[in-house]
Length: 131
Image (cartoon, rainbow, N blue to C red):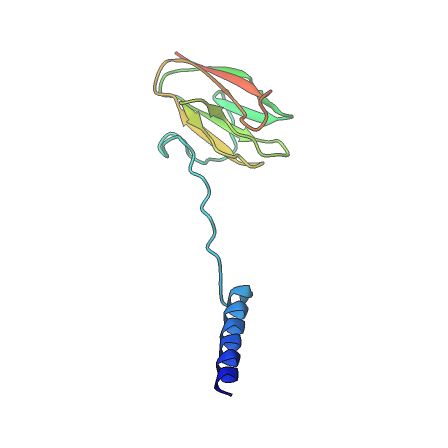
C-alpha cells in the first residue's frame, strides 16, 4: 500500500511538471537578434533615403550601383524591395538583415573605394568611392 501511494505521488508530480512546461506557466525568453559588425555610431536607423548620398535597394539591385562621396559623408541605403537584403562590405560595414522598408546608414571616415553587396543575394553589388 505504501508503494502505491509513493508511485501515485511521483505520477502527480510528473503530471504537474509536464503541465507547467507545456505552456501554462513556462515562457521562453526571446533570443536577441544578432548585432551587426559595425559600431552603432556608424550605422543609424533613419527615414527613407533621399538625396545625393542615398542608395535605393529595389528589384534585387543597388541604385545607383556606384556612388562617390567625400570623407566624413554618410550614405543611406533604403530597402524598397519585397524581400530582406544586406549591405555588406567585408571588414568595413554590415547592415545585418535589412527588412523591406528599413534603412541603413554608414559614415565613411577614410578615403578609398569600398565594394559592397548583399550577402543573401551575391549577384547584388555596389561600390562607394570616398574622396
